[in-house]
Length: 342
Image (cartoon, rainbow, N blue to C red; front, top):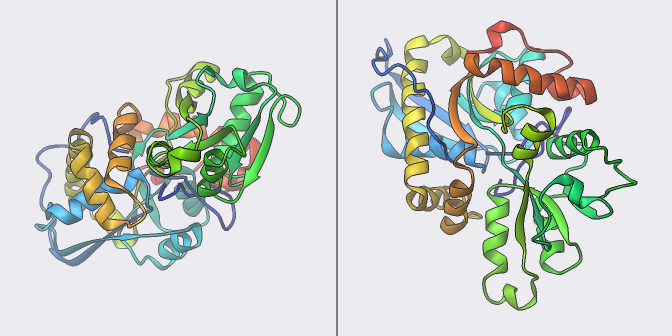
């Protein structure tokens, strides 16, 4: 997040994305060592919470038994992600689940290994009394990234609540979450949709001097994951992002088993040690603050969870179908085949 990246069909595939995890099922504890030690293993991800366990793996040396060098690198925008995937210039990449499906359906050789980000979207408001999207009737909401994933989810849930966008709720589009937060801070807007860790970073900023002198009190308002569950009568989580294996790595079952084992451990570490994880993330990404990241990790304990892609498939296919019904290009025009699910 670090602002969250957009999730869009063509040039702008993504999320937004990225908090640490409540460790769910874990991979087999006795994974077999990789048959050949690789000279280098490249892990890549956005500034979002989905990437923090990858940073931990690289920093801790957890995979030194399978590669001489393990490196984490960031992709900063959807174009970089597409280029990285097409050129196969990384081995294990964190990305939005719809982008993974889109690339797969367009012929990019990849496999989805897991989902760890199950929703990071929140309303931020100057009004502490708004509890559901229906409470935003008659109000203006600032929305980063027109036509991207947060916008689509907001519209879907609003429509299911009987709210007509443009009539019952006015959307004011801005270029980025930074622009949205600036409008809130300077009292030029009252409500916005943001993703973690942008939410926590913004709330921290508005309570610090000198911003607090001019900024309004802001509140973490409606949790869109809870709204997803309530409105659609499903579990309150959205299978938003996870890890993909690219190129030759996707067929190295021993290496992938080792990676998933360490990935689950790294996720658990991030959740158990939010301050240490925040400090680590801030070392990797200048725009992040340790305190903001730690807050974001605490806020997303229930929606950061390691789930194997095959086990997540039913929820992924429901999610993909919602996107197909509204903007097919977000997932490449069809549900991905079974081989997509690692």
